[in-house]
Length: 295
Image (cartoon, rainbow, N blue to C red; front, side, top):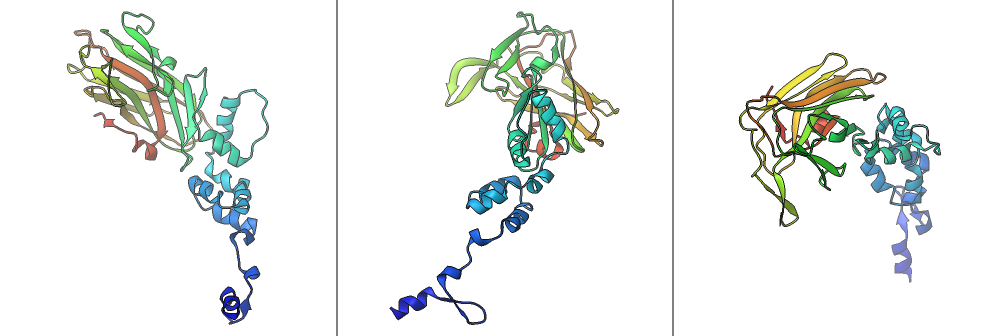
């Protein structure tokens, strides 16, 4: 009995005996102290700790934790997503949760989201928001429904002599450096599969090995990038890195005009899927780049 009692007692550094009821618990930490600790962590770590107990969960909802993790332009992003629709005011944690998922706008032709770890703003633009030579002529193009695209549809080029894919957008980006990519694939889908992967045929691929495709963009403040690349990746989606641009004023709209061209009319070209254009912070772009084209 005495042994059991003594084993339940603990001593503080001064040698005084403490009863089990005085033993410190996580739930005893003041909520304000927990919130202060959480403010120094990144969002995934905060969410993990919020599952420990009620005290951590309640502390994790403090606005001062999430405000610095949101992009500086989040009010603008909310405005274009919600437009004039009435909505219940959200806390900063709920705003972060909303924006960390892909959100479509502009009639479903664009999606915006923020990176869950860094809060960096990413933007994807469907081929449907671009001007494409002959896109409505079924002799040249097919519109293909697929789950391989976040927009659930891609454009397939059967054959054409003059190819131009042109886009133009305005967006309020936070200050930083951004990369722009074209997402493309060579080949034609067959009815065959290798496991879960679709098998693509090379029968209709032609014209891409004769002259390189030219990618370029210009921004409203005069930045310009040009790159060229011979397309040769059969059956795989490739993010072709066009270049980087710098945003210095987060309060101003940045306008970007971009294009993909192959306008040598001495030969036709075909067998190309066009999905979208991706714009993301340069540090995140290092994880998505598949091919850097030469200037």
